[in-house]
Image (cartoon, rainbow, N blue to C red; front, side, top):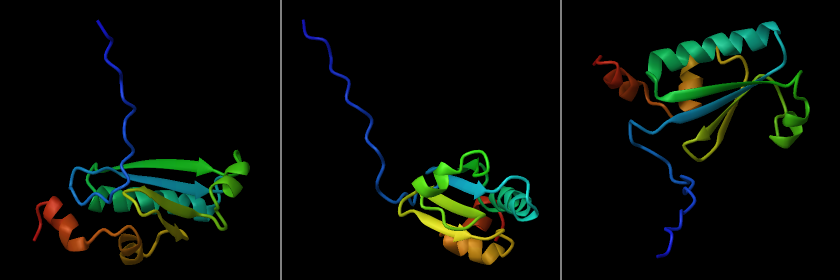
Length: 119
């Protein structure tokens, strides 16, 4: 009897419009600088207000991992990278302009209000 062959999981390369699709956000910062701390705080607030658990945040401190800046093509900090869903998008700055962040992440305020039960 042959053993079943396990197939590797396919990478999702299509843009997910489903509300259940996870948004992967990676924020590149430089230590505990005021702009880095502001970006972290602003990102957490935006995610809590507009994504309701449909996201994952990874904070990468380039002071501890400077080679990652080159490897991931980070030219300025803080930089937010949305890896999923594709296409990848990058936002540079402390994320204080909520409308610009939502636009860059392709999150429509009307959709997020529906998720929160508001009209």
